[in-house]
Length: 350
Image (cartoon, rainbow, N blue to C red):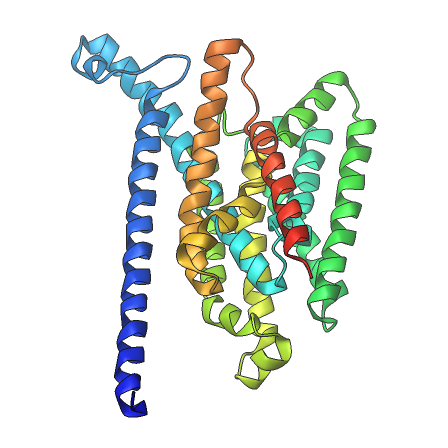
């Protein structure tokens, strides 16, 4: 066959593949959105008091109580689950692309540990009882301090130095957190610290949403701006620089976005693990391995995972007794996936 006649056939085949991939991505995004809507509806209705549409049309007292539960309890919990889960999924995808490490997750750079230490400090010194926003505000401060330390230690040393700096800062922050728990002035403070560290969406109101929401939105926007640069970084740092990528700017966007978004999320809900690790891996087989394409699917998947976990804790509470903390639930479900991922990477290793 003449070479000139082969080229159109190859181009047509490549175009068909691109169209098929585009249809698959659109279909996956549509299914994720439908799943999120379904989970949101279940989240609004399920709980210790199950809500039924008929209750909103019943007597005035019944309708008022149903609206109170829906608007003041269930709806802020739903919004917070979507914000926190989405930002954990997005930050996991960004950090895995930035470090080119499939096991990277939001806690890798010390942000979660720093936010935990800041929040625990608030509880330890009794500031949490003075005003309601003391814990999340100090959690944000702790996240900022941790990220500043990580960036200062790892700056100029490449990705490996940044990861090692994050591990060191995480170890320091967790050590200080456990020291505060060990030296807690009374059993009630120790119990409150322990409960917060387990991570929970329960008993969260609009105050927490309005406090964390702006930081999460701004941080997520900064992380979303790294997409094209992450594609170039997948070829290596030297190749990315040759393509005109400003690595310092990319690092700053990713780190500042993670600090704002994940720090705010952790400061409000406590530490919630595995969502940021799992969400990108679930999406890669469906949307391809180009880092930029994974960002928003991982955001939707993270939101769906955390919302499903929150619903699961409520159903367990209704069926078996004490309500599991959502951080415990995600760890129990996520650990087997982590083991599977490690085994898979070992099999693929040369």
